[in-house]
Image (cartoon, rainbow, N blue to C red):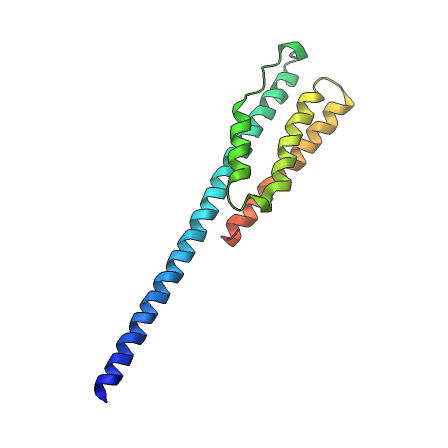
Length: 142
């Protein structure tokens, strides 16, 4: 009888070890996914903020529309990486709004009221995107 109890104890212990290992791997996988999403989000935000910053600086210094630097084609790669990252679906609308704010700034450059609206929209888009990313970081879950 004691052999059966020992066998049952060994099987229960082995099962608990396997379950613990499974749970640990699942938590690590989710943490890795969150880290990848946050990294892709930070790259998207910094790229588009740099591009918008260039436009804002050019406007501040009175640079003519014809003398604006060409848009960095790397932005397409950064946006693709962000939208292809697992979990980006939760940040899709705020990420798209950030990208659209750059397009609006570029289109409204030196156009008075349109430029002012684009600057306000850019600020709101940046805050919305940052808050959405921070929410993912706080939860540590996508």
